[in-house]
Length: 84
Image (cartoon, rainbow, N blue to C red; front, side, top):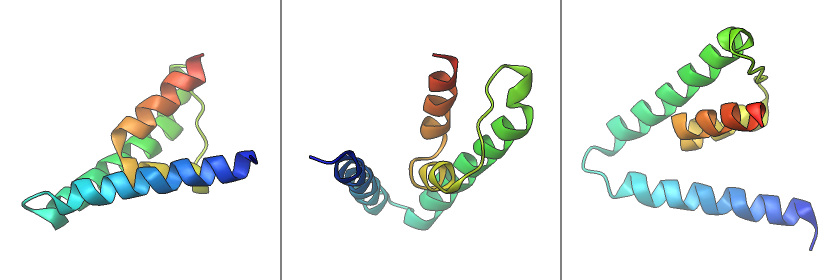
């Protein structure tokens, strides 16, 4: 299998999991907005101030979409992977 196909499948599974999670919430829109906004804020903060802790994470389409869909846990994983 090609790595692009595997990567696309994993991303699609993450989107489906988050869609199921958000639809099961009582206040869907509030949950979606809070998850998205906190993920974006975390990404921009670590982009701007991450140099001080040794995590230089760029703002690109992959990181933006990951932080929008998965939120803060995605940004934390990026920061941890930056240290490894």
